[in-house]
Length: 253
Image 1 (cartoon, rainbow, N blue to C red):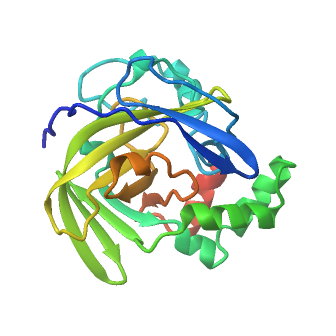
Image 2 (cartoon, rainbow, N blue to C red; image 1 turned 60 degrees about the vertical axis):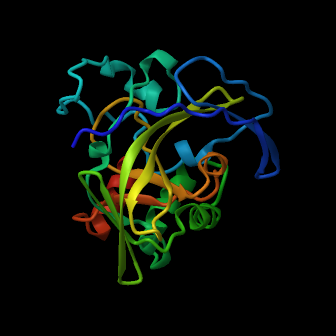
């Protein structure tokens, strides 16, 4: 289903946060213009430390909706958060269509301990236990399954399901003093269950139309406040993957 074009977007003020004891300032831009400001320093580790696509090209077999051929040799830079505003393109909900499972239960039952041990071996920044604590906060969610079809998004929580119909509401660019950036693609609930969030924001390290292989989702009723959420990023992988599949996917990236 073809989704609506972006609405006019409001500017979001720079907000000051503290991450791991380090002052952090984030600038947000509501369009692809170069309006970001940056201050402070930011270890945007949830974008780069864990099971993300840095250096992995998912797009070679995907036909983009607009027929535009992207230079995939730059994918590594894009996934690492280095790109030009002109490279960003609007996306539709179909990019995240499918049946998705939360990885939080795999953290809780110890399945991901192998992943955290591997991360600790590759970096001296955290121990395996410290990584697990970090992701405990990041992955935490009660929504253990999400199904996206057409313009409908269904949350499954405690054997209860609720559905909303969403329309595209543009994107926001998050800029960090460290030099990397991120893009949140935003959808607004137009119809459906009132219990569903007014806004959902996708982050999957892509900046133009492509099929997601996993994603981080932010949701709530305050569009601008959501952009300041950096510590909790519920993460979803395809529901057909079993525990071993999830681990292998994370280790591969």
